[in-house]
Image 1 (tube, rainbow, N blue to C red):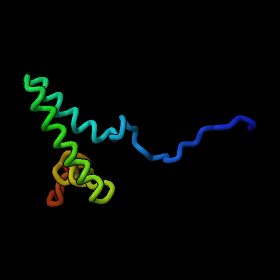
Image 2 (image 1 turned 90 degrees about the vertical axis):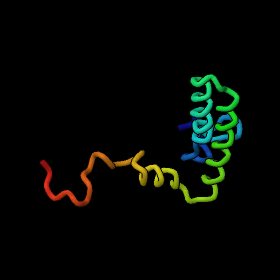
Image 3 (image 1 turned 60 degrees about the horizontal axis):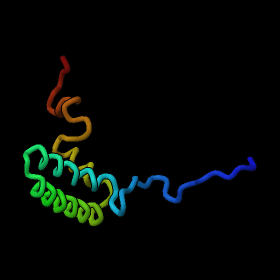
Length: 92
């Protein structure tokens, strides 16, 4: 064990591109991609920039995991659809 090992300062930190984290970049890239597909690149980039800024503000104001909870609430994340609703008494 005479070799030194690199231990990162923040083990759970997300990867970054310049000063943005990957989840923020992903929000912008979705809108840029939609703008490219619809042949409105500049509008898609502007909407993506605004959405990224809005997501960043919400991300740092709310508690960690807030976006995942909202996605679960609206059915985009989690077990909804795989587990029956509370009122189902028998499984077929």
